[in-house]
Length: 209
Image (cartoon, rainbow, N blue to C red; front, top):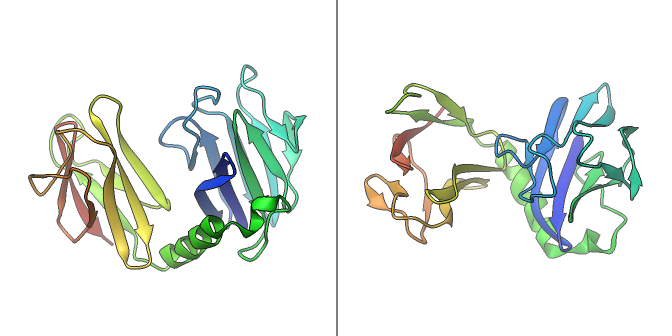
């Protein structure tokens, strides 16, 4: 099992646990680990997890990838390696109980984030289905610990997987952000089956598998 925890100014802001496959890292909101910085390429790097090993590869020559502060095109990651990208860094660990060697390893934010992440894995899978517009019928899986939707100017929401369920809140408030035709505002709302979220005039219905 591979765990990636993203930090900014020594504060954990996102984490993900993966058994296998390809982990996309970048500025694009569809990435598995979203790094919101202009110093990061939309598709910055990928980590390939297979047979208990993890290899990270740089995707854009204009955006350097550093592992333990050394420039790398490709690198086999080891437990507690630190991936430096822009002003952010990602700590890679090989188990749920592994702790990074940096001083922030005892940060209560990290411990809380890890607990929430492990609990979230036990939740039933959930999705959003687009109900109108050119992408009508499209299914958006909510598989990440945090899923961000929207764009600057039209509002941005975050859907978080927690022990108790899925919760939606506004990361960037806008009058166009609604839930069940009511303004979302600064509320944190637990999602129930068939709730309708509206972002940039696009309604999406929440449902679980």
